[in-house]
Length: 259
Image (cartoon, rainbow, N blue to C red; front, side, top):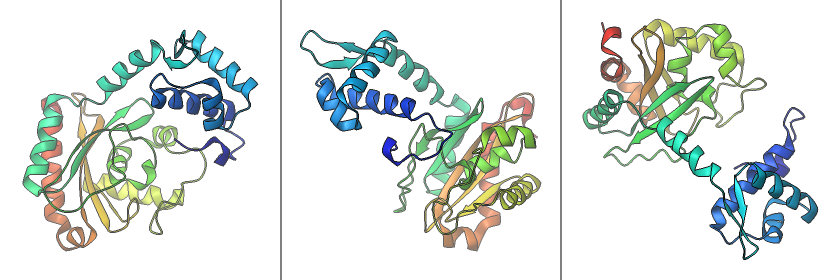
């Protein structure tokens, strides 16, 4: 989680960020956290730490044990249960994801549109040596720099795109990252026209990703399948890779939406 001390955006509620950091430390400590140790970890004075812990306790996120330490409260498992459900792709999506990985030999992953965010649901590790270090189920950030997210965004109207994209600047992740909104709009239009999105080294240097959207019964884009590989391979064989990814994205789509 981002260090609260590193956040300088005036639009961010730092108290909320610190409260979430506090809850994260309670989870990590696995029942051994004291108010003092938590205050030190999060950078709070003791009085503020006690106030936040009391608030979290009233909401059921932490409990104060007889031994004087703090542990996870009943609200956290309930949240985890909902998150776990959101991270489980539908069977046809999971089947298409693994088939894509098996055919290409490359790490592949599935993303889903959930409200006003795009969530990475599942990763199928490839048999090749390339490892994409930044991939993790539950990830929902840096959507402007990821082909998986662009594939979905390309199918949405501009109003919906604006709800999902960062409200302010598009952060630079590598020296190749698209950081200007107008340039991103061009890339999204291109992705819509050709039926897939591609990014080269914008999220991780040396890696290129190609993604295609999949659709629900009404024909609305609800997710994407992506394959990650060395940037040189995409440059040499983009058309064939795109055909493969689009084929399995069609298999992930609801039968009513398939051509």
